[in-house]
Each structure stands twice: as C-alpha cells, then as structure tokens.
Image 1: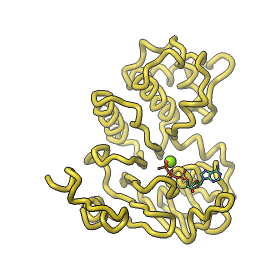
Image 2: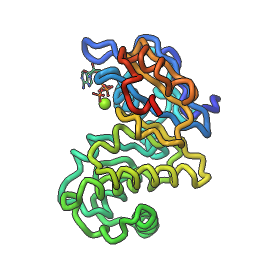
Image 3: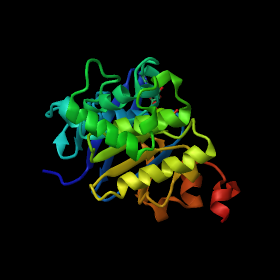
Amino acid sequence: MSDHVIDIEHLYLSRQETEVFVDFSWKVKAQEHWFIMGNNGCGKTTLLDALMGYVRFQKGLIRVLGAQLGKVFIPDLRKKIGYVSPWIFKRMRDTMPVSKVVASGVDGSVGYWGDIPLPLQQKVAEQLEFFHCAHLAQRSWGSLSSGQQFKVILARASVNAPRLLLLDEPFSQLDIGARLKAYDFIERLAGQGKGLSVILVTHHLEDISDLYTHGLLFKDGQNYLRGPREEVLIAEAFNDIFHIEAKKLKFFNN
Ligand SMILES: Nc1ncnc2c1ncn2[C@@H]1O[C@H](COP(=O)(O)OP(=O)(O)OP(=O)(O)O)[C@@H](O)[C@H]1O
Ligand SMILES: [Mg+2]
C-alpha cells in the first residue's frame, strides 16, 4: 500500500477530443503542501476533479490517501478530502442556511436537507467558530459577501477533519484583506498537527505563502515541471514553462 497522499502513475485522460494528460505521474508525500500553476486549459481543474473521482481517466493509476480509484467506494474517499472549487459556490442554493452549507461537507453534497443531527451540529458550530463565522450560522448562503462565502466553504471543506485539502483558485473573488485572512486560515488549518496536506491551484504568485513546500508548473498535460518550491519558483522555470520573460514580474526581482 502506498504511503503517499497522492500517487499518480502514467495517467492518460482525455475529455471528448482533448488529450488533457498523456503520461503524467505525480506523488505527494505526507507533510508536503503543493501549489499548482499553469496556463488556462492545461488541466489543473481536471486533475483535482480526477482525484475526487468526478472526472474519469482512461489509463494509468490514481491513488488518493492510499485508496486506488476504481477500487474504492468513491463517496467514502470524498469524505476524507476537503474540496473547494468554483462550481460549489455556483451550485449552492441561495436560500440554503449557512449551517446547512457547512453540514453538507459531511458527505460532499452541495447542500443539506432535513434536520442536522446533534453531533454534526456540534462539528458545524466548531468549524464556523474556527473561521470566525459563528454569527452567520442562520443567514442564507445568497445573502453573504464573497469573503464570507469563502470562509463558509472552507468550513464546509473542513467539517470532516480531512487529510487532504484541494483548493481550485479559491481566492479569485477576495479583496486584499480577505485574501490575507484566507492565507492565514489555511495555514492555521495545516498547522493543527492533524496531518493535513494542502494542494492549491492558483494563477497568482502572491498566493504562494511559505506554507507551500513544492510546486507543479504546467504548460500542458505533457509539459510540466515540479519539485521543491525553491527549484520551481525561479524565473528560468517560468520562462521555460510559460514562455514569458519572468524577470519582468516584480515577484522575481525582489
Ligand atoms: N466538461 C468538459 N468537457 C470536455 N472538455 C473539457 C471539459 N472540461 C474541461 N475540458 C477541457 O479540458 C482541458 C483542461 O481543462 P481544465 O478546466 O482542467 O483547465 P484548467 O487548467 O483548470 O484551466 P483554467 O486555468 O482556465 O481554470 C481544456 O482543454 C478544456 O477545454
Ligand atoms: Mg481551472
């Protein structure tokens, strides 16, 4: 059995006519936190969705938290993964009370129907407290600001104390202050000593806080570079992958 948090071997995945991954292998060990950057359409969302079992792959092997996709009961695996993706924000019903949005993280549904059992109510309250959102518990999803929605979705993703947190461009709607708070919440979650691994997809270099130990840079599903952050967060790597003059970015001039 693999002791990796994520273990992908020789992945081939095509979506309709697009070959997104041709022969992609990637391993994430416990204690590692990865950022993923890459051109639009290179396959970042597809990769996270494949890990969640939302997108099928045709060849290769994917193991998540030791469970092999295709052999594991996917709903059980999803309970161990916190997942934040733009489509969850879009699909949540505006009338859904915040407490039920958070409760829905228990089985990865987008919304919770019926009464929340007491033990789950307790977990929901703890998460809302952790993310400074206890006062929002009875508000409806649609009445929240983007920053408030983000914190509630992080609470939803954390309600099962996941071992893996997959974040797909989570900060795109946040103002500067909310962004900094969001970085802080994620660092606090990862720092709780519960063995959480964070995978962050982003287009913004400033999102890559010191938390992230490794990076994966995609040009496309066949051309990529990965490694410890100090090896990939360099102008040469960005020149190579993105065909840009990275030295023109302020990030590389400090
Ligand atoms: N539902 C779908 N059906 C068919 N092709 C799809 C589907 N979703 C994505 N694709 C294609 O798969 C490829 C990878 O898309 P994906 O959304 O994973 O890219 P991405 O790296 O997340 O891009 P972005 O930075 O724009 O979010 C693209 O060519 C895209 O057009
Ligand atoms: Mg995407």
